[in-house]
Amino acid sequence: MAKSEFPNQLRKLRERRRISRRVLAELCGISKSALSRYERGERVPTLTDAEALADFFEVSLDRLCGREKIFSERPRTGTPAAVAVV
Image 1: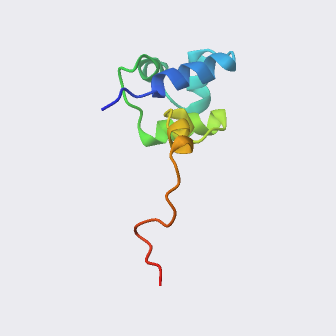
Image 2: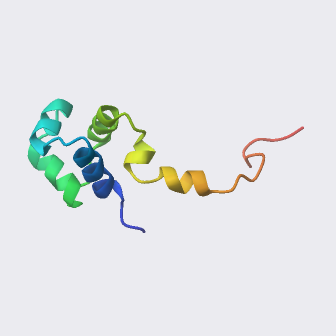
Image 3: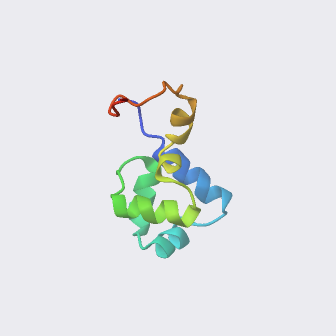
């Protein structure tokens, strides 16, 4: 399994906004220590925490996890397999 891009994306977004970990943690209702661990990749955020961070930065969870680029590069294959065409 590939290493998560979440820590890098989170740090980049926070630094672009020029906001401290303490302030971001307070605004998102997350402890500063948890936020620091998220950025270092030592802890995986809960869905609630990830949503709060994505909402603050106004990005999708896919973007925050570094998956947006992966999905946009995948070729479209037409009709999804789960949909029957009559």
